Length: 241
Image (cartoon, rainbow, N blue to C red; front, side):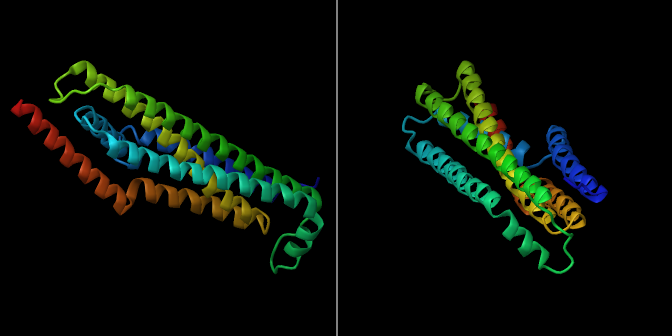
């Protein structure tokens, strides 16, 4: 297998971008308002409100909708993985197609197989994350079904139970997010088939896109504002009680 120095550098850059961004986002979310941090607070509010409702059909529908989205990605991941594995039998043809594209790096069978292996590994990881997210939402449904009713929301013990449900939902959402990130970074790996420099640029672009969407987007601003409104409303409600 013939590795060029540029291939090694580009793949190292890809790993650093993925692992580095995951670590950065996890640490920054503890101190900065972002999608993960603000949605966690929304989930706590949601579970606290759930405890006060006798009829929880709405919550069941919302959780089912979340699970449906994850199920779609899990099944799609299996189809994509099957397609990638099928390409192992078409390596010579794939090499000829890539070689016919202007400005691409000269391909060879061994490198194409390696790149396909990286893609396969990414989608296997994504499948594990999506299925684990599905299981955690299943656990959450059990906890919701077992949750007693606290009409006035004054039971401190049940508030702790609501927070535990929010934490479980948060973990399920994190697994879903990790699976989506795998899809984002798989797009960068596709660029590796054409040229290592394009692979580096794509890896950096994916990190930039994720950062903008998770920390600087208009969606983050709206979710943050909503979180502050709910915090103020809950503080006012507790003061009245």
